[in-house]
Amino acid sequence: MNPLVAYPSFRNFFLSRIATTASNQMLMVVVAWQMYDITQSAYDLGMVGLAQFLPALALSLLVGQIADRYDRRRILAWCLVGQLGVAALLIAGTLGRWLDREIILLASLALGAAKAFQMPTQQALGPLLVPPEVLPRALAINSAGTQFAIILGPAIGGFLYVAGAAAVYSTCALLCVAAMVFTMLIRVDHAPPPREPVTLQTLFAGISFIWNRKEILGAISLDLFAVLLGGATALLPIFARDILHVGPWGLGLLRSAPAIGALLVSLYLARHPIQRKVGRVMFGAVALYGMATLVFALSTSFGLSLLALALTGAFDMVSVVVRQSLVQLDTPNEMRGRVSAVNSIFIGASNQLGEFESGVTAGWFGAVPSVLIGGFGTLAIVAIWMKLFPSLANREKLTG
Image (tube, rainbow, N blue to C red; front, top):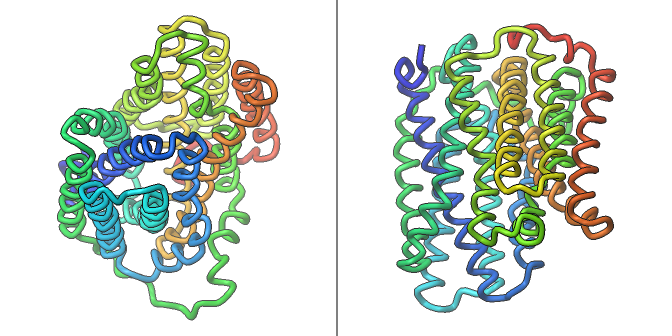
């Protein structure tokens, strides 16, 4: 049964997430372009990403408490109000010609704070909208929509930029308004649990819960180290210019390739959910992700490089759907906000620290050895984690 048809609240959640993701993708493309246009500094481009990550790190414990105590729909709506405010600030700064490095970093911090609340709340809200037996398929559909927005958002933003940055920011604002409307149409039957007094125990409850559930700990830490080591996104400009000799247009295709692979696999999993040997499937997918990374590192063919990157996205999506299903199905509703907040930190750390790791090792050894090290490191992590978390490796079904 298709969750988009059978469960109207999930459909509204799905449409809200697509609009939000497309808005974020468009926003960040233009913010990065304007920052580089103003400062001509690669360091400042990195600062934009860091400014978005720091609020998530600082607010993680608070975010989980709020997501577990209050109406998650309203939290999402307020996050969208914050993003709308960021878009309005950037529109005013662009039209008034007073947008500078500091304003962009301030806007990035504000956007990071809104996303710090948004991501865990979305993860905690989704499982309330469909029955447990439908959740894996719903997560796959949701992932497909997100990947579609990741592919389409930057392309639309680049096209609209012909009319000026303010036109892109205005479109982002309209998408935020649409997302707010869809969010408020969501109906949740589950009431928030009683609000316990805030103590150190409740603040760290998400961390404690994950630590004591070895299968959840294994799943999210596997993703953390695999993406941290195996990701090559930060080095794609070097591969495009110096190895594949394809220029900016090729760089755009290289950046889109993992999302295309992920989209195709998520569409397949939406129709054919993983039913058996889910632990082996997840570990196998991460191992294949590492092998595809090795192929990309050694490739001097643009077509083969595109295929290898598409495969990294495809295999990563298998791991993502299994991991998210395990986390959500094994976590009680009253804990999902706090657990999702910790999970979001793992995801953010793997992406941001992965880019940092790639840059450092590329500076020491070169781009190709850096990606090779990451690919072999991912394979080593798979072997080690299968020994450390045997119950996860041998898990038969998503529902424990």
